[in-house]
Length: 561
Image 1 (tube, rainbow, N blue to C red):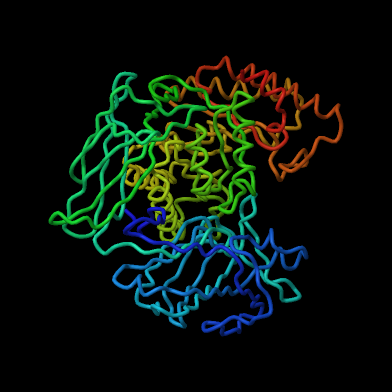
Image 2: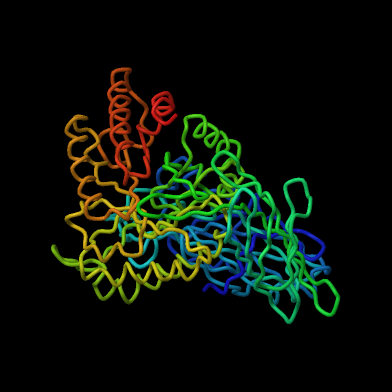
């Protein structure tokens, strides 16, 4: 389990926070020879959070690959003396070294994970403090997502991803400086263990630093107390609970108080939803009732940490109006802010790990990718650390109904089984609730070793997205035959079928607009016929629409309602 404290920063009687969003000094370091650890050149400033792709216009700057520097100066009050002070980054692409007042405070690795650095000893209290962040966005074969950086004939570094989406570069997530008391809550896990319309039992487990007592108070949306508990691991009984469900994101507030010898030392509020999720006999169950996932792809910038909450909320409202209930993100994690909006709006989320483009060195045709020595010795640990970090951060969001651990793995052969098993065990160890595990795959069933799927109950099939331009009858026929095979040989698996063209396909990328009414009609009728067929197949528990197919509001409203 991760030892990093990833509770969201808050301000209350025991905790304080400073939001570091705003303008930061910025400099490119194309030759990697700058020594800005004590101060960045005052030639340019940029807003944070923001990815380079959103900040600049010229292709050279938007597609910059290499090192860059950020600086922000901030006054720290003497009131913070005696507390532990953390600096949190919720999105740096891809790695960073953080300096505070010229001293290295910590390092970060991973484009989509949050990092928290203890800067208590580096700060000067009652003075101005200088925070410097040295960022490098070069892809690596042994980071997630995986790729490589090459040098062009003219000497320019260029990222070459092994996957089909863009990784945000620079500091693209929120940055927060905050205090926590020395005796404190460090983490909390919540799950609904019993549920009916008459009564729910919610169990929590609190982790603390110091020898102290934890007391819990659960309040409804109006602030009324509905249950109380004592101890770090306790159950709360709620009479006539308001159950969290699709379109009704009702959230309770769990108040946790940390005290010692009768003195209060810390308070933390965690919003929770009362709901259960499982896969039983190939059926996805939400609150004990079968639910069929009707999902559209959440595309950049709406999945980003700096996403416009108004735009995201509008997309969620449009999804619900169409009869949809779920979002997916094609191998990219969704930010905590977007997950919070999903919680509030009753939107289901398949939370995806950035495990895309995993490719062994010197892989030969016919070899099992995940059995190669470099994958097992280097990529596996990175993959497990990423799973640990993201589940630790996002585990209490009721909107998350599944963790998707791999995005379009290159091979699923018998020799790969250990890898698939290891990452699944990591996820189950990290998630107290034991939500269903998922894989996003492109292989046909005949190309998959069944042992690789033992721990996974939801399979997201991208098998037909590259054939999206085919005639609907041909597509329907091949899809039907494959799904019947799945039902016969893997009846306990819940399947979700992805429809719509891949970004890399010639036909209709994610940002494509319909060129004519005739094109719209072709795609509309294709989606309608496929959804009709899939709705009659008991093992198909999800329709996942991407690109052109996700833009058919009228068609989806007719098919999903």
